[in-house]
Image (cartoon, rainbow, N blue to C red; front, top):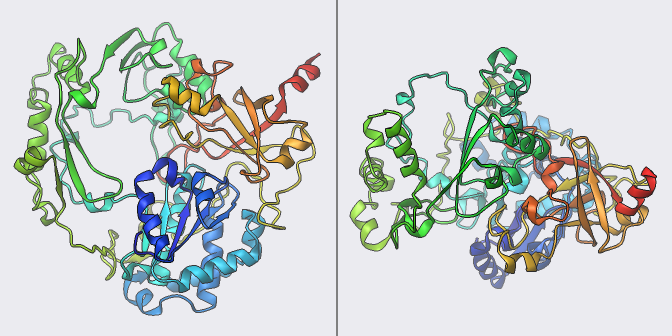
Length: 564
């Protein structure tokens, strides 16, 4: 990023969630780079950037397709790179013809003229970098949105240049790691063991087999849809570690109801008395990072880092892995994997690597200096000459593998579950909301001081965030008679939560934002925004759709008047 001349930060609040990257972006700006943030909210990052493009949540693929329409029709694409290192350009050319800037403007809320200018700037500025993050993914069409946006660098040949391309993380550099030491599926006696999708935890813990079936993991369109006959027996025991599902899971009402089951045996391994720990039959003290072994990969560089315990476990605390080892021993399991210490497992993992990328990583080096860089060149241009991790080795605009799995083989737009769309009249004008009952699109990105539900229990961070808030645009607040500081009820068919209004132009009209994720017991009404988050899955990977939520908002006083 430090070498880019144009940086699109797309669905990422870098100053909050990836602050380590910001100095490199600032370095690029000193060399003349422009930074454009594409986001429904004017975040800290958007305020610090050169431009904020407000987009309706879940419509990113429509914007990217319209950019491709302009780039291809104006012949701004890199024809040589496309010919050598991509597959399916002709099919893509045909697909994007229907995606005019005018059509995309109606969907995204970004004006047609701005879409045209953005496409031209992106195609003609070198190097051009795109930074994406999870904001792009957490809606019904999130997987296809990422796939569509990720085609842009290949279309314009941005991968040729140092400082060009697209990145969420550097995990691709670690893709050749042999993890057979860690993942030993062959040792599971029953190959048909249920795999449950955590985002449907409320369904998974239900006593209704039809509900339990909905929680079974089946991420691809071609995967059979589980039925009640596939549900299996009710879950009788739940072990929770490294998570606080009572606060962070979608469909919070169903999750909390399940955790209240008298016949559910719940064990929570934790450092703190979280919302989830409140429902535990047993709380086992877990070690912190200072007390156990671990191996860390990075989001933003190519180093492996060894986490060595600085102190012995405090009190009766144990690493999660040691708790499971002792449990396995008590149950009579004698396999070697239950006898190995964490240090032994990590050493075997490092010593089992055979790919040339790991030639510079040895156990001794990790012990001596705590880190080791992968054997990758500097500068590293992974896709300058193709070499994509696809069956063809090329960027596949048309993917036979995706077609085989039941997906559209070409980049496409999957509308969000919430069907609200922009009017296209201007970058910030949405369809008029003329009644209290009108639906609004709701997103819930992390508050600046929190990391999901981590750190919420620290008073100094609570003081920074003040209280659970709901951002509303003045247009939406005005028709509802809402002013900043007033309590508002946010609800849909799943549940409701009371938040404090913050009326601000920093959110697009038609959209509300609830910074998260507050613990329930630290919130005014004992609930958080996940009361209204549906447990539906994304189109690819079956992830959560935290930013694809439809809600209604009303002043609490008006709600009381209506009920009288």
